[in-house]
Length: 254
Image (cartoon, rainbow, N blue to C red; front, side, top):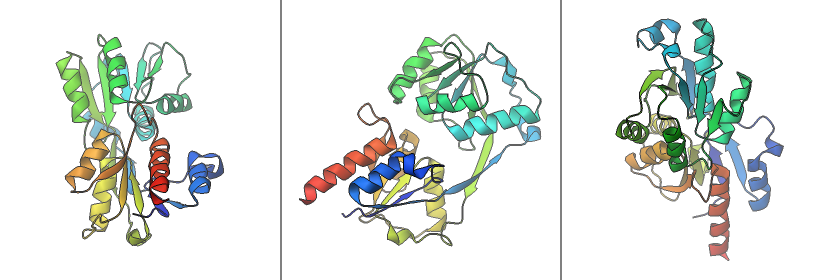
């Protein structure tokens, strides 16, 4: 297995040279390309109302991605909903918590994040707030089943509500998938898009990276293997996990 070309299934960072990807590119003399694997659209206020979920009936909102934050607050604006000062926000990572500043003033007693970005750490955060009624904005695939199982087992009250929809981007017209030795997936939608665009794709010697358990599960359900996984206690970010994999690979090649 040689790793010279990596495909990141997201848009490129606004300032690539200051991103961890730039460090990886320089450190290992590799090429890194970015291409968003799917398109995202907000759910309309009309469609959201059909779910009969009242946002203001809740005392906390769970966020698992920056995209969910964007589309949740876009929906609130279209429905003329102002979030109360008492609302708490429970975020899976520090990066997601920090991103919330785009929409609300950051306060320690209002915004909370898992300590090390792992599911176990986030479960601890949920337990600390188990008396609150929680709202989980999500995409068309719903909420991570493992999270729902944990909430149910611990008697935590919650509602889930779809705030965004996804569809595969046109990959086959824009990228040569055979060029890449590693593909990084950030959600099950990335796997669906890859399958839709390249139905005959075979993993072969391609290494997959996955962010989150749902991405790992989707990769495995497709009959593939995830070689790089984050977040974990050892590797809290996907770039940390890629770095460790490339370092081990480089040592093996010596």
